[in-house]
Length: 133
Image 1 (spheres, rainbow, N blue to C red):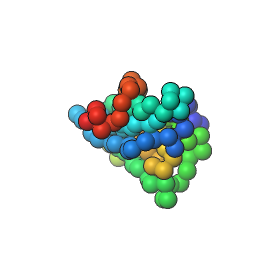
Image 2 (image 1 turned 90 degrees about the horizontal axis):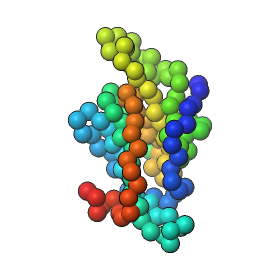
Image 3 (image 1 turned 180 degrees about the vertical axis):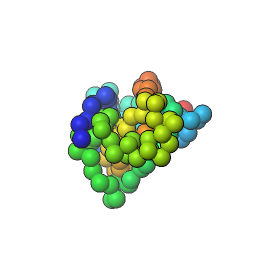
């Protein structure tokens, strides 16, 4: 299993201040989060990750996670994923589309995994997540 690193959480994920939110909009999975940054006088910032054309996801809480080395605070692609192979075998007519297995582990929140076409990084903004919702 080879990992390709794409993005690193802006601060250690134990600095998440209130929550991690997972939602779906028009076929896309979206993770939103807020965190405090000690380098900016503990100001609160928020941002997120959007997974385009998500076909599957799974989330394991911290207590029940089979940890994937290299995912702590990092968004990675898991190359040659058995999960992607399984999904393609279930629906071969969709196998022509590019499916990627993305994963990120966030301290106290667990492992988030997505099978999606691609991802997009939502810009970081100042302010708490609850102010954005």
